[in-house]
Amino acid sequence: MPEHFEIKLIEKELFLDALQNRILLFDGAMGTEIQKHDPKPEDFPNNQDGFNDGLVITHPEWIKEIHRSYLDAGADCIETNSFGSNKIKLDEYGFGDQTVDFNKKIAQLAFEVCEEYSDPPRYVIGSMGPTGFLPSSTDPDLGQKPLDEIQEAFELQAEGLILGGVDALLIETSQDILEVKLVIEACHNAIEKTGKKIPIISNTTLDQYGKMLLGTNIQAAYTTVSDMGIDVFGLNCSTGPIEMNPSIQWLDEQNEHTLLVVPNAGMPENQGGKAVYKMTPEKMSNALGDFLDQYKKVRIIGGCCGTNPEHIKALRKVIDEKANSLKG
Image 1 (tube, rainbow, N blue to C red):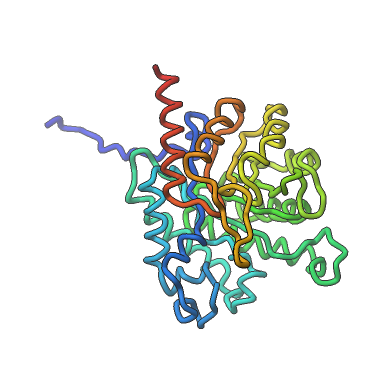
Image 2: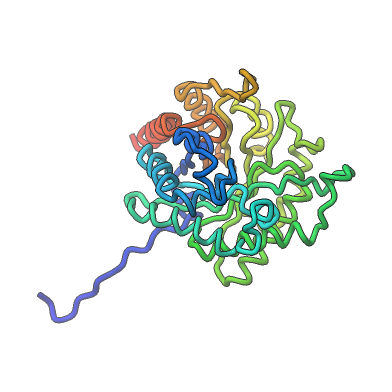
């Protein structure tokens, strides 16, 4: 053995570097998978039925199992189970004063699962869903939250997610472009406070006519946030991939930001008062495969409502087939 030898720790490729080198696959729905456990009110903290993010306290093994199911299906990235963990949402369940630690714990749980998978490296994406308020609205109920309170609610969440080890922050299912701006500012503040440079992914949610809830179109939404220091821009939720096509085409033509496309498994159908998603894994993978062929800026795909590990497995197959054909 030589007198001097070095043990080199292989550092994980950074998320943005990985994004330049290959298409990244996000996971699918979390809520749908939680329902497979048939949770009862007593499964949630303080018997608060539907407090899915609180399962990190009462049933962390469920969340770990769901994360693993998506990683086993071939996902490169898993989203933290923190969609409703901004301070305003957590206040509703009595955990608002623990926002930073609560999000840190959720992120650490996802990080621990990702550590079990190393080749290729997997990434933890910090999920930040909306408050449920619409600061742009004149509605006396939905528009009543002060802007600084909304921004602080997300700043505390982002801080916790960063401290918990996320590789990127994801602003998703956004209904109000003013709230998106507030969340982006909150993310930058949390990044500065923690001293950890974390990429920011900014998503909007459009209806089948290409508009946000309050009528903002994709051109206005993108123009509003494109120069705010975001790293990726995308669309998620509300519709299936087909309805997203015109908006993604326009975004691709701008040739600026890397794009994310994370649709539902088709348009929801109302059956007995429940939203049902019927797009099969094969149909969804074909549709998103077409996006990868047509739009060079689309570098992230995945699934939102109604998708499960089978959808992600089908998307993995499409990505791998395209990568192999390029090598060939």
